[in-house]
Length: 385
Ligand SMILES: Cc1cc2nc3c(=O)[nH]c(=O)nc-3n(C[C@H](O)[C@H](O)[C@H](O)COP(=O)(O)OP(=O)(O)OC[C@H]3O[C@@H](n4cnc5c(N)ncnc54)[C@H](O)[C@@H]3O)c2cc1C
Picture 1: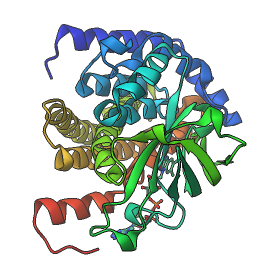
Picture 2: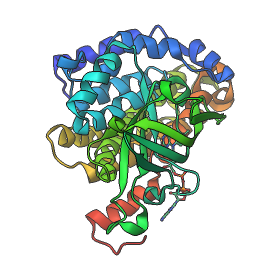
Picture 3: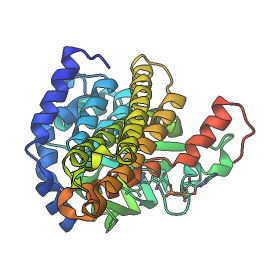
Picture 4: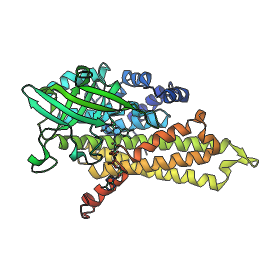
């Protein structure tokens, strides 16, 4: 892919920052399941997490396509962008649908690093992927909303100041379409943690700082509502396209890391008196993963460009996410196989990246649900649910 000088410069700058956070740093954080705060601070100081914030609010006003390059390079360097990626994609809902007051209040602080916007509360334990069945409710009471319910898998909630929260404001039985009656709130967590909001960490197979969040009569000002009450699902769909595109870009970065790591190892490792990479049985899986990654990479940038041009990239964002997550998972498996037993040793980082890469065919949306979207909305097949 030929790239502009600006994009090449972004790549170099992210690579230089990531070089300060080598494998040992991530291994240590992984073993302790500790939040990589130093890395997130460094990304923030360098302005990368404010890439999408317009210049008049202190950001750099870059396109989603450029933001995708930042996330790709973080992963390609062996780092873990999951510690900070939400700030990029949550931003979209605030930028597109937030009021001038909300933007003026929060964006400069997010851009200069004094505020973190890292928590996205959508998933719930009982509704799963069926987001429209979520049970968290927000009831208007004078100048406030009172929120009750529970979220699950709210990643980085312990390390965020702000949370974008989806809740039902009109009961499902009272709305004409089930997509209505949901609303989005920008919750200032500093005011409610321990005062209506309780966060409980969930330990997972990789270092992801994910949590359960409970709301018990949590009171937030009515000014936390984004856009119009009841239209939250529409607002969040656009944000979800940005999320899928950015995570797809991370998967491309992961695939590149696995392919480079496997290629280097296959050139060095001597067995039967020659490099293992001299055997086509070892070469071909690497070459196949490379082709798969390149094809997915084209779709990721195509989706980002549709988004940046103001189009609706629903199909493209979903396809990019599916193809890129499958390419990175195939590359992860290939990389372990190429390393033989050493693929399981922590010091090679392969097993850590393998665990981290596994997430993305499941979250933020699983492959089946993407196939279902394409079947129904693109191919016109009968609706299945
Ligand atoms: C580490 C981690 C971090 C996360 N971070 C966040 C976060 O920050 N914020 C947030 O809101 N969420 C987050 N999530 C949640 C994530 O988006 C969901 O786990 C994901 O969307 C899948 O939903 P589910 O787990 O409820 O699976 P379910 O909906 O229970 O589905 C289980 C399986 O059944 C399949 N399935 C379900 N229905 C159908 C159907 N109709 N047809 C075919 N197959 C079907 C699915 O594809 C899936 O494979 C995170 C999850 C994890 C594991």
